[in-house]
Image (cartoon, rainbow over all chains, first blue to last red; front, side, top):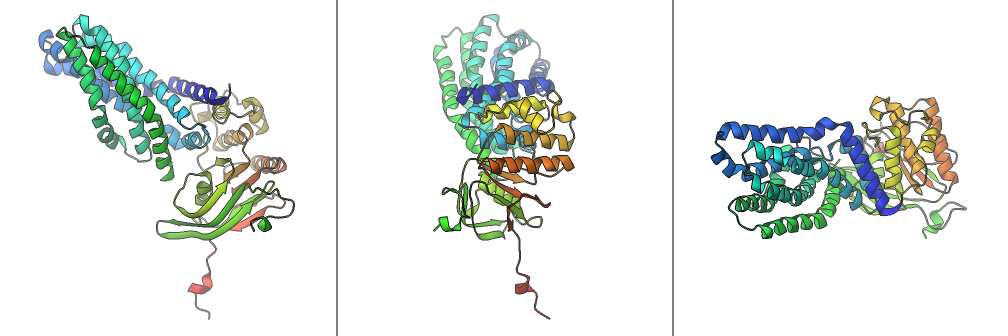
Length: 227
Length: 211
């Protein structure tokens, strides 16, 4: 297939194949998520009352951190082997391969975490009636995490140890998503209608979708020009 | 005025025109006042010692290095740098399919691999290949993607004798098609009619006192 659709699909296909070939890198952040959840259960204590009350916040914070962990390697390998500079030079329009890369990244982080949310809910005694709303908020909120994080990953890809800097750059940008995401689940536990919060999460993700691909493209250029 | 700089028989629109290009890196002048014009069918060899700015010049033309003065006008280019641009976890064919999609190229991956002598390696992951074989896979993208201007940075590195002959043949094809090539190399390219630009030629007379 030719044209913009071909560029997007070609890149997406490449990312999916590469991810499946190096499955360990894909699984590590997910394993981290569940390990950290287990640590919370052990540290806070396993009374369903206490743990259940804090579960929304714990899940959302750990999803943010696992996302960061996954994002660190988003451009790293491509930068090292030179495919990143070819992607930036050859891709026309340039934001499309970026969008495809971020999409693949989201499938293996945001979407995977949404699918695994019931397990997290079980470990943290999250009340069953808010499981649906937890998964919904993760589904519509996590694209923003991946998109915004990709900007930071693009800016720090040229640095040898960009991990901490990435966290410092990106975590502040995650605050709106965290507030609306964890807030929605907590309010839902109290029986409040959370349609507004879900719309806000969608709005943040849509805003990120319209801005981030171009920002990533520009950031990648800056990183490549330094090398 | 620009036209007079062009050699006989060249088309009017140059594929690469550089005017008064100057480049400084870490406070050191790499080159300055560089003016050149490259028309269809022309090959320019960049020569010069390590650190003389060959790679920087190529990256500047490719659009990967913005810290220069002067103007660069280049046609759509293919950049072949130090890093091969071959993903290790993917097979040779997957790598080239990606390139074909990325630049909306017309060439088939299998044909391109056959052209660079890698037929039979389509389904081999590139991490299991030698450095020279990976460079050959990287060269295949010159076949898959078409661009009027090639920017090659040390394309002969890690290649055996037949691989070096292959690079020369690819360059000859590109020139024959009416493309242009800028190639930084330490070895001789042996491309007939190639112009040579020597970078990093210092004027030793200014420093060393005679006698």
